[in-house]
Length: 136
Image 1 (spheres, one colour):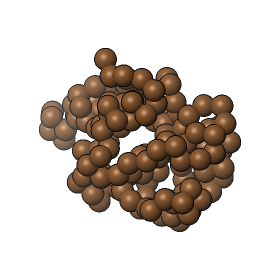
Image 2: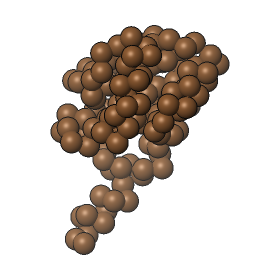
Image 3: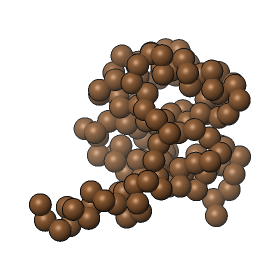
Image 4: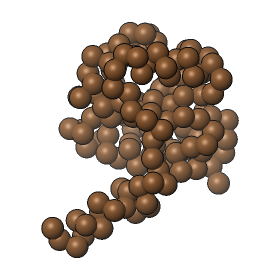
């Protein structure tokens, strides 16, 4: 493995330590959706729907990680892999009455989708603003 590859594995996509921009968990089964919905009654939940097959998703991932770094303590952030967990991703769309897309961010508050955005609209400042905070 080349030195650049080793460095890339240690750092997140924007050069920061991966531990600084970690998701709170992954959504991999239907019970995970139930847990997010329940938790949204006391704390906002953010679901990021991602596909490793989509170049736009990789750019969106950087934006979501920036939002986690700046406002991660204000909400719980979860990763949903739309390829590995396709039935769960489709169930999320049906449960909350939204069109399935990726990349896509869902803000779940008190059991409902309070806001969602997809594709090029996935921006750190937009996520942070929807959480009620301003980017510093």
